[in-house]
Image 1: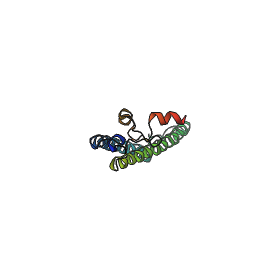
Image 2: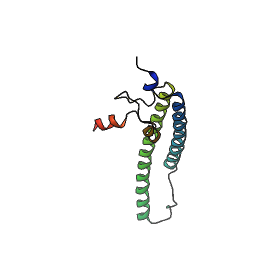
Image 3: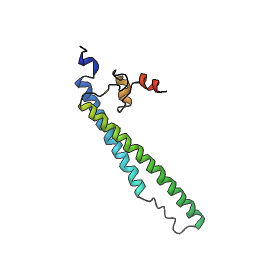
Image 4: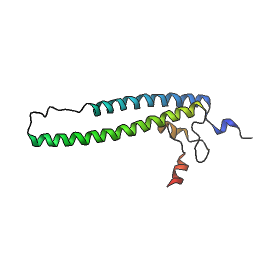
Length: 127
């Protein structure tokens, strides 16, 4: 029988990862709130009394800004969802196990990319 300790991270390691993930979720949520407030704010720079040509440029720029913010918000929401899924894996003690190889993902990788579900080895096989 395979020793369970070698196929998963220790409870102490999981607690460390949990703390890291919660901090990342809080920061990501604050960043998302900032992106959303910028998106909702219309960013009116007081161009009402300027020339029509400048106003057209400003409105075009504003539209591009809103699209960029929308894309950023979508990416940030996915990042938060991935982090919450990682937190769920911590809770059920499957965190850090590669979904492809079944081996432990290196601690160094998880500290950098805490929502990783694949080892570097598995990622390289995808290419």
